[in-house]
Length: 342
Ligand SMILES: [Zn+2]
Ligand SMILES: [Zn+2]
Image (cartoon, rainbow, N blue to C red; front, side, top):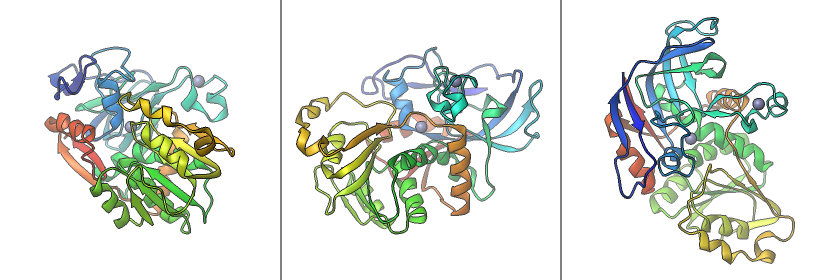
């Protein structure tokens, strides 16, 4: 089959085309696994973190991609959840141990043996992939393939982030960064919490315009002060300056939720501007979001279908995956990016 491979950890600046289109053996479904013919796969900033070594794949080469929509071709031994031809999705969670204290308490996202799709095992930037059937999801019919793909990471992890803010209707929410996840969270908030005002921070005028179009009360740059204090902020940026600025915009007792698997080091100096009375005093909190549970994905897909939340998508051909990543690197973002594979 054709697959795009990460062959080595390297800088995007030195090699702007790090994914290599290769021919590799077709995967074979093992016990409890299904074989999927991939239709589309969403593109995520995490692919950059893998390639640039902030969260390096443990084995190389690896096929990246963790927002996979495809159809079941074959079920392995003792796999019976899906019928051939059924449409399924695969998210960032590829497997977890199932018996540790985290797995047994609804926190499989924190399992020590958590395996991530497209980092720890091969993902969806390929014609076929295998996945344990217990970690594949039914996809509601209301979504086309390209609309569904971004729901599997940008949407589901955004949903988890929103839950972790403890936001209540009538409060103020900040969104720091407005890419694939931000635009889906804004759509979700407008439905779930109709009286919440959303304040968006982005360095891109295009993203700010997009945010206002989708119903944000206000959109400004990171260093701008929001016109009202915020009960919670979700940060999806790869940088540090937005963290400090977000803390400054929080109300007393407010919470900043960082939805980023890793932060880049470029502006780490900005952390020295942290002023305890301005940014942390008065019981402000910071919480990160790690991975996602299957229940997050299931709950979000159901909620998104009932609204419905339709992703704004930019489609790329399979061969143009490097361009899609470069566009994310340059923050040339408008909604979510999806590769069309078949
Ligand atoms: Zn992702
Ligand atoms: Zn576990």
